[in-house]
Image (cartoon, one colour):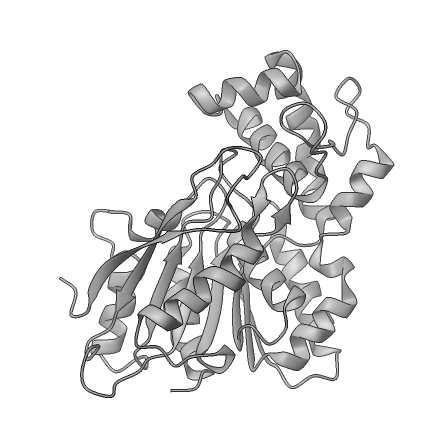
Length: 335
């Protein structure tokens, strides 16, 4: 049982209006309000949580027997005095391809703009927050970690702290190995367009098809071709041979946080805290990327405090790691 409470806000997005996939513009924003919310004069910092690929805002509150969800665990930590109280914000940034990567794309929609220019200001307007960047953190796992870091890199001064749980980075090591899986699934489906149409009806059928869905969603985010055929993107490989197409792969790499040193430097100068972790048996090798990221940020002459950690485990089933990052991030925010 929560000591705080959950509420649902509705938001009609302007920047998602007319998005190429026809995805909904009326979106939910879930919010966890801590104990003491509503007391006269009380204001609280916020942590925006971004889910991994093929999950959405409601996934953060998913039921598991014998295990609290993220909001329930954080609620317990506040009551036990293990964390300062904060509001948790869970926006809906998904799309037809099961994930937007939280960036702006001419093939899917302006999801980073939606976060930065609509959701964060609306939250400050509607809830009793500590308004402005100094009272905001953003965190996520996997694709959500990527989206959280990219927001700080692309729009320094929007948030004060970032949680990066096994986030996407180091694409040459972490993303490239799955491309041939995607090529197999696309060929079996009859091509990219046929796969795109079928996967929205039945979902990905098997591990290779899931990789193909992720690769397609990332291609739509990183290499949009809005005037082309569905799904309006350029693949980073030749579907017939699975060989890398340099132009397409270069467009992917341009979104890799480790290939954007100026953005990392800007984030390092604007943030007070960056929490980085990954499992030491991550199936995608994202712990290798996490090591490089921590080193890259620490080499910058910025004021950010970096917490870098590897834990025993893999990529999936790691939402419990928020029990470590959330109190740490909240402590870096203005109260």
